[in-house]
Length: 404
Image 1 (spheres, rainbow, N blue to C red):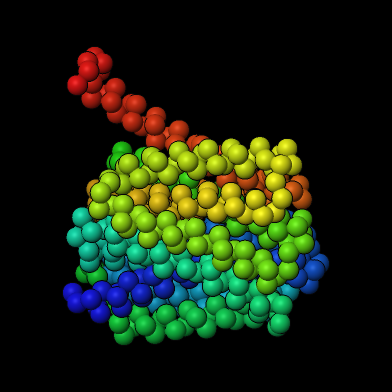
Image 2: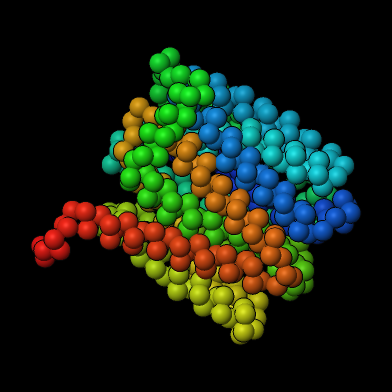
């Protein structure tokens, strides 16, 4: 594979992965305007984010077997067309309940990009290069929070929040054309894969029984739910509590996105010297410490908005370090069922993200406490699971406790 082909491949796979981040981030600056226009509360608008995350979680479970049985491209075409139609419907929504439903359908279509991209990485790249490839994809994904909210903020301020959804439909149409002409087919269709519910469930259970998959899926999923808590609460915190404008919020979101971009680049370098396991452990440790400091500071009113942004920046660097590494270690044991494993990992991760965003909405207080409390909790639980797994593994391998 030439450098040009490698660049084009990563760009298309990255674009596929950015469909959902753009769908999540681009409309955030429009929350206050949407609440006013649809005669509802910010908390109810936040539920449209939760419904999107739930849609991703459910949709990925269906796409896993479909991508294994029919190959990568046919399910991509179907899912992306559904996404485009649902995006247009979101632009012309008439109530918050209709918006929540359309966001769910939009997610069902758009999530195929995430599953297919991760499966194609497993198809095309050798296993010892998977973490680096996923790191590059994470870098492309990390750029989207810099662009999406800023662009969404300007579109909302100068046009309307409805234009955001029309833009999402247009962007995905361009990606669909690129897939048709430039994306490799990846793994061949496997007619032996059954789509019968009993067989599909059995395949997913086999994936879940793999201890390495289960451990790193849980660690990555729970720790990775922290950014979703931030996404769910940040518009209300910065715009309503601190009085930041739509465009100003977009720039804050872009600044915080650079935390993940920088750490993703750093991860690519660190992997040359350290293992994925070591990087995950260190990143979760400092996220836990920073998370607790954030929680105490907000609770005791220690911080102004600038120091809160600084601490959130430091915290979010951990996501660019632990996310690609936990994903790579989760998928490493699989070859034949790579699509199903990718779908299960993505589904459970998004379910955890959806739960975190729902908790921020449910415990809405008009302060930053629900947001930072959820972020800190995710990091703490993630490192707890990681250390518990290490302890039980060591106890199993050395039951007598004899020093090595």
